[in-house]
Image 1 (cartoon, protein in one colour):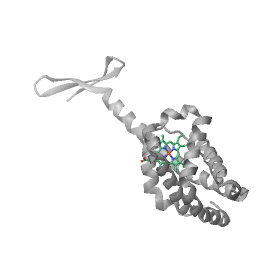
Image 2 (cartoon, helix red, strand yellow; image 1 turned 135 degrees about the vertical axis):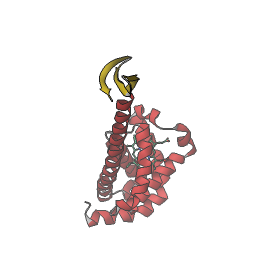
Image 3 (cartoon, rainbow, N blue to C red; image 1 turned 90 degrees about the vertical axis):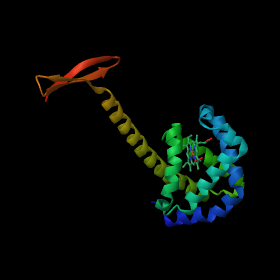
Image 4 (cartoon, rainbow, N blue to C red; image 1 turned 30 degrees about the horizontal axis):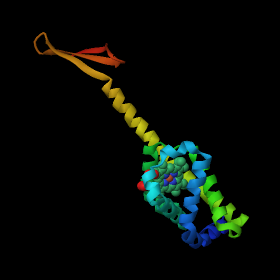
Length: 190
Ligand code: HEM
C-alpha cells in the first residue's frame, strides 16, 4: 500500500505527464529497444510508427496514476490490456525492464523538475501497477493452461468400438492415445 504522501505526489504529477506524456513514451521506446533489442519483435511496428501504441501506453499510465489509490476501479481496463499481453507472450520478468526504462525516460524528459522525491514516488507507483498486471496475467495464463490441458486429455481418450454382444449387452472399448498410437485403456460391458 502506498503512503498518502506518495499518492499525493503521483496525483500532482498527472498534469505534467499530460503535457509531456507523448515525449516520455516516445523516449521510453527508444531507450527500451536500445537496451533490449530482443523486445523489438514483440511490438507491432505499424502501431509504433503511427503513434497508436505511444498514445495507448500514455493513456494507461495517466489512468493508473489518477486511480493509484483505487486501482480496482480500472480493473476492467487492466484485464483488457492483460489479455493482449498474455496473447503476445509478455512475461512478469519484462515488467522491471519496462519500469526501469520508463523511469529513465521520465527523468530525462522532465529534467530538473524530476526530483528524487518524484522519481521515487513513480518507482513505487509503477511497482504497484505492475503487480496488478502481473497478478491478472498470471491468473489468465493458469486458466488457459488448465483449459488446454482438459482439452488435450479428453482428445487423447476416445471410444474406439461399440459392439452389440450377446443380445442387448454392448461392449465399449476405450483407447488412450500416446503419440500416434492408440492403446487399449479399458473395456466396459453394459
Ligand atoms: C504496467 C505496465 C504496462 C502498461 C500500463 C501497459 C499498457 C499497455 C497498453 C494500454 C497497451 C495497448 C493495448 C491494446 O492495444 O489493446 C499495451 C500493449 C502492449 N504491451 Fe503493454 N503495458 C505494460 C507493460 C508491458 C510490458 C512489461 C511489456 C513487455 C515488454 C508490454 C508489451 C506490450 C505489447 C507488445 C503490446 C502490443 C503493442 C503493439 O500492438 O505494438 N507491456 N500495453
